[in-house]
Length: 248
Image 1 (cartoon, rainbow, N blue to C red):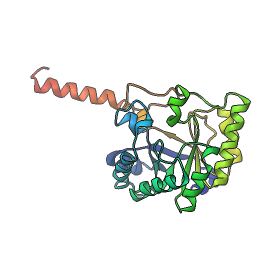
Image 2: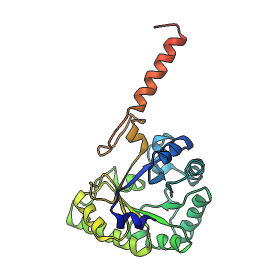
Image 3: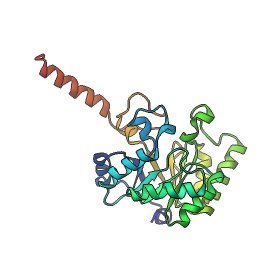
Image 4: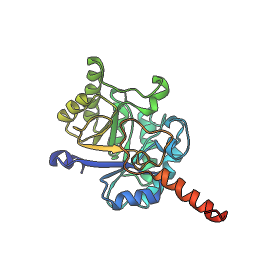
């Protein structure tokens, strides 16, 4: 199905969701792909970064979203250190599929081809993820844009080609130089889904909380904001408080 998007030229619309009402609203609004992302660790569970998220937590939230989705593709994120070997990767992927995911996503390029191939061989479609990898934020000392040097760009291009060879159905390109993302998009047979990687990708994804302004304490510079849900919640609660306390 994702290959059809690549051939048609129609841009793929993707967002994250972590619970039943959010997933249902996105599905009914016509979003093509819904990712139950490990970003829930930060915007839902209050962790410092995504490395704290467990497979059990991903199962819980995937199951909730699966009850809501009727038409979009539902993708579950494999959390940190749950796909360190082909065998572990397959076992973890099966758990998310059993929870309702139609596909799984994992981070990493050439170093993860064995895990990708094993999951695909087990009959589970895989979405790859290269560029800035949130699960490696501690190793890299922060969130850094990728592909700024010829060597860095070359590694990303090599990663994308290796993942396609291993059998991925799509690739997320996160926080990389737009020209590099455009080159990858033009040269791979599967759709690319950008986030902070320019406008030439086959689709775009955002964290829902960034789009709707529901997490005001941090928002990546590349994230567009189309609403102020946090502001509206604060306004409503303050109005309710004044009413209960008898103040105008």
